[in-house]
Length: 233
Image 1 (cartoon, helix red, strand yellow):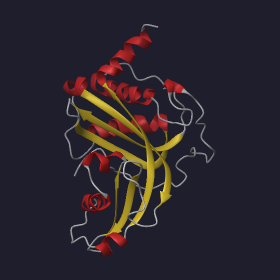
Image 2 (image 1 turned 120 degrees about the horizontal axis):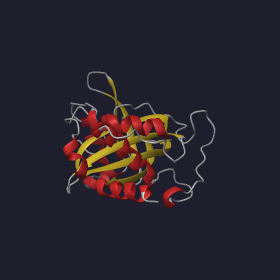
Image 3 (image 1 turned 120 degrees about the vertical axis):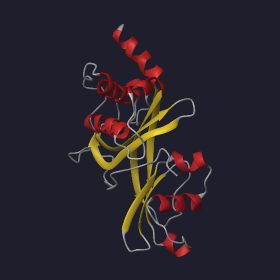
Image 4 (image 1 turned 180 degrees about the vertical axis):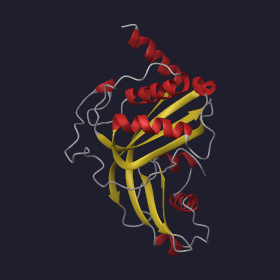
């Protein structure tokens, strides 16, 4: 299954809610009516569209965004059409400054997801972008120690040939697919490259990290309306 949970870089930073200098992040700001303890804001999605529009149409380079430049693991997901068909999703479990991280992964997920052809200029008007900020990483006691709809999971396991592999699903995947814990774990093993018979012992050998995600989605029409309103002020 290839859905909005794909990954490229997967090294977990267990201090994922701290900034790059190791100091506590300043999460008390209130940009775009976000909750006081939230990091995510709609401005992050608008910025991803600014970056993509610049690369596709050679418009003016995006301005430095207004949201804080703290460090978090993040994912950027592009979907298209009324059915929200996946067009690219790549992120990192390394904490990155949000300004440079969103700029990088807006482009990487749009043009370099190996499962898809690069997004084209003609698709721009049909796109939705989702930004996921990953927080609250915890080691699970076993492969069942996570809550569907609340936690994303990252598993580390050994293939039938002895290779070490990792794979992740963002928090929304299991509930969107209607999977229970076992179906989610088995799908994730397959996604990570396990080709043998999946037994109870295989599942018990998994090392699981659970995490939570703050996610927002913005459509291209919403982005253009924001663009017009900010320039008419």
